[in-house]
Image 1 (cartoon, helix red, strand yellow):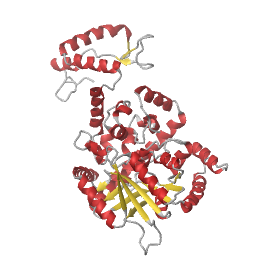
Image 2: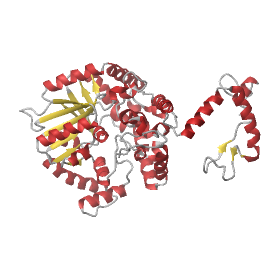
Image 3: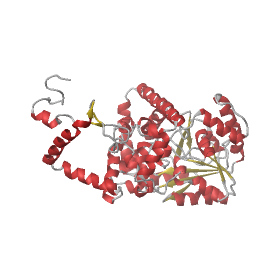
Image 4: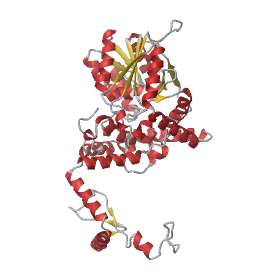
Length: 480
């Protein structure tokens, strides 16, 4: 669910709620660990994964630098292949195009493959308002739809659900009492239910993982096969792609695809990697009579030439979520956006506005793990700091936070005063110091249940000036 404004207080409330949910904690811990381990194994199998990451970085940076040119080439070649190409400035315009196409074909039932851009523009409510029933066919997305929730992860929408919760949702949807621990039985029921929707649907809607300019092709990456049913069974297929999902040629697409599945799920390649170039031809056994491709901007191009341009290099693998210490504890729904985790912190204010999500730049420890695992080596911590700076510049921080940060900045700019203050604080903390912690009595426990670490008896600068540390920062006397 998109928020009208996600304040820091609201994010903290959601985070606390997530931390106190044992089933959510169990689901998040198991799923993110599984993805991390899979990525590590898959990367280890590549002969030189770092060189491949460098190559992907160069490809993405060069492509974004000539974005308009590649998109125009894509439009020209996709049109020549028989597709209809539409341009949408924002989510409202994209939804209007989709609804217009559906109404022109008298669509009543629409099947969807997993699409983060669809979540971004909130296409389901727009379809429902027009009297069109959208049915999610990715198992995770369908589970989330049944629960009336939004996806919790870029590649695994129902990562926050346990088997027990899934069984309850499917039992309610099908009117059957389904076994909790029989996963094949649960998936068989889902397959049976959704197969009827595929066959009766008037239109299919998907996202786009990669678009190839030289042939006007779009590539879909799935693991369930539902994507191919959505694109080939209904008579009309509509695909939504963000402007950044473009590559010039198939050579660049090959590098992208080599790292996408390995980074996302730990697979060498996803089970179904589908290439679509235009609608079905006369000799094709199946496929849509019409293919519509919507190229969505939604404030993405506003990042060009700014400190946030690098985020357009993202290939949406989700690996940054799986290593983020914040995401792994609170899950995606706490972020109030389709895009969660470190990439969501940067992308969400870009698309929806920083004023609507002032909490997100602070949902980060700046540990740098996201940059370490990113296949495109995107410097997310740098851009998160840029958003924090921008919040301060626009005056979006709470007044107390704003003044405390300004006071701290002024104090740190006066080193003599800072050193004098720390000497005073060492003396003040003495009665409350226990085992390296400062344990304040109520009502002065400003950090809640946690104890503050005590100030060291000497600062690093004092130790350096006294010659007690070597050039590497270690103890010059060999002490531990």
